[in-house]
Image (cartoon, rainbow, N blue to C red; front, side, top):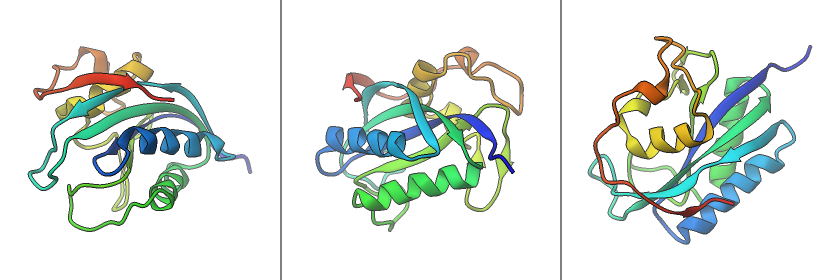
Length: 165
């Protein structure tokens, strides 16, 4: 049986350590996975922490990927990369070395305990939506059929501070 072919966008974020390096290492690790090919990388954006727990500012980016696996396997790959690069899960929304989220998969909606696609707060967070639109400007919300490019831009401070890769 052949694994499904997915067009997806992975969000990357970091607020601890050498944040730019960690984002680049996360994207590189994703691209070297045998079942994943990174096809496009966004710019790096700075944003203040969300959720009121983290102390530092975040750097965020997105990677468009073509994956030959299930959505659950794609998430598992992302979580393994997070652990490899020092992520230790603790308090929700706390500072972290690397966070990788499956933001969107073309034509896919999922609501499972470990994975919701599209990401449930995608259109509420500029640090997720704007990088996604850079790498997948034609992305459509599979629930509504609306183009994300037409969505109202979420409020929040966001500044492009470099390139990923």
